[in-house]
Image (tube, rainbow, N blue to C red; front, side, top):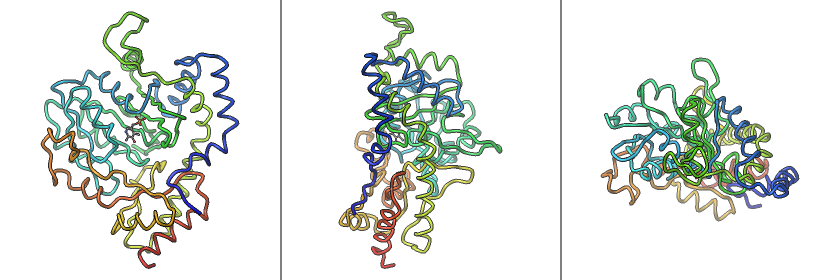
Length: 370
Ligand SMILES: *Cc1c(COP(=O)(O)O)cnc(C)c1O
């Protein structure tokens, strides 16, 4: 039986009636842009994230772009981020005219190292963009302490609903950031049926600015205080997401159970290093990412048996051709480069059944002769 990396059809089959009913309501209403489904979803995501405001937009990429713009970041400014992430994290910094400055990762969690971030801060640093990679939050409290007065944009595209204990209290992804950003790309834990994104904040003025930026920079239609974007969340997507949101906690729990099962199954396989979850973190496992000896050969072997896997990410951003102008080279961020050579993400989606997971485990063990 083939085991895909992600099986969206299995999920859709379980919730089809709820989702299609919600979509049909939007079609019957013929109100497609913003409107009530978007407002209801914004309230629900704000509640989940313990934030005062949530503002829907067209994608997780746009959420980052609008966040940077809302903090007036542009030409001449530097923004510190991690090179071991999806491209959008740094692409948006470039696209507002600022300079991405890369800080290497902590090898245990793959999240940005606070010490490295602190070491690359200059007087031109206008924000730091940590990424909550693969489903676990970065050490935000440590970053804030090391970089006081630097606004923090938390790229939580992979981490909606994840939480971290800070000073003895659960803190949600997005809650402590100046602006937190989410993506509803279909492969995220809360995925739409197309593109979508959201920004969360506790700050009144920033929320107002973000709302304006997503509708061409005008608080009143046809009067523009600044130049913004067309970046709205579709009502149809909001309806889908609203129907899916009540399932998110169960889906994330199922992912954690699958992760724990893998952890046990690979405990006696030294060629495979299972993920490290930082003390105090509850991961939502957007990915279950191991470090593997002979990674490429393992991936080819899994593929030959019909088992899906993926390398997130094969080339760190500081080595991407489009960022050659920044002057980084091989060796600039050695932990990110090493991770890029070793990582492999295995199927961990909620609907994965035990026999499928046993197949993945059996194939990995067999590859190493266990
Ligand atoms: C998916 C993702 C994004 C971009 O989200 P889109 O909705 O695809 O634009 C940004 N950052 C990270 C870390 C992501 O995983």
